[in-house]
Image 1 (tube, protein in one colour):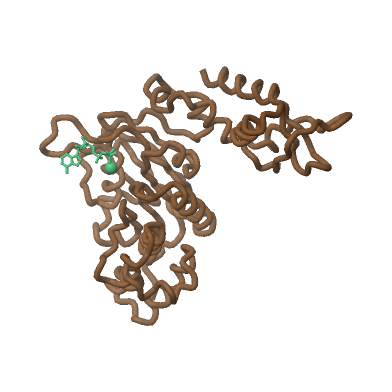
Image 2 (image 1 turned 30 degrees about the vertical axis):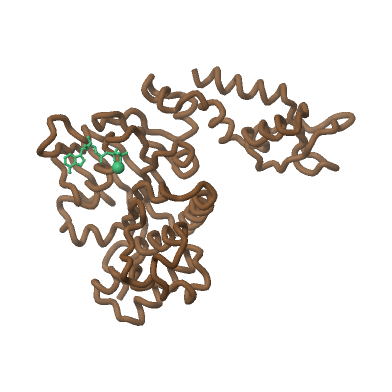
Length: 332
Ligand SMILES: Nc1ncnc2c1ncn2[C@@H]1O[C@H](COP(=O)(O)OP(=O)(O)OP(=O)(O)O)[C@@H](O)[C@H]1O
Ligand SMILES: [Mg+2]
């Protein structure tokens, strides 16, 4: 019943993918080549008009390539019928694109019903997905209309709908752009937990660099004119911006953002010897950026790692400064 599509994650390869819109003299996407490994999240960032949405819609052939190729799981998208192709791709757009006159369950069941799943099977799948995206108990959400949900809840329904037929690929175009910071943080964490369980190959467009760093296994930075400025892990991009454009795009908080990628545990501060200073304690999973914030807020000279009464290490402000200058020096 469920599908004729491969359910496992698939690698996506852009091979010199180029898009020229008929009315435009310059290409919107210019010879983009990059590989998103199966099951990874690729965050796409860059200036407005840089070709991010185009890069996404080329994959499901809502926009047709002008040159080059894109392969999903080794198969060229031009060899696949667009309708069949789209069934293997979940697409989440900004403001969710839910149909307001249809219930939450009906929105999620849309594609399964088009694929002639039975009413029972489609309903069962909708309820299962509502639970999966954290709208629980599902029965309480299924028969409401989108306007009867909060923005974050609607966003989750949008994700559930995209997952309905278990596509190997997810395209997400600024999916959390309209949410307030707290809801956004929750939905980001929810999606990361979900992704850890179901591992779809995901292309995720965002304007928010912190979101790209948090969500992306790798980040692709597109330049105006749709050329690729850099494609690498967040860590490497922050440490080694490929050029002036990337450095400017990352901005002056680059070293702070890098501190956010390292935890107290990873820095392995020396275990205390002698008397333990009267500093606040923080768990080993605390990022160096949070550690710095605590130190500044408390007006102290360092942090204890782990339990206050039995710390596993300590981090002095000097050591933190040292770490950040080493980071800054390395990233220059
Ligand atoms: N249907 C279209 N016809 C002509 N030009 C288009 C079309 N869609 C997009 N473009 C142009 O292609 C370029 C890339 O657009 P695209 O929507 O991919 O950018 P983006 O990076 O998603 O921007 P934003 O961050 O503002 O969403 C832009 O210059 C845009 O004006
Ligand atoms: Mg866009």
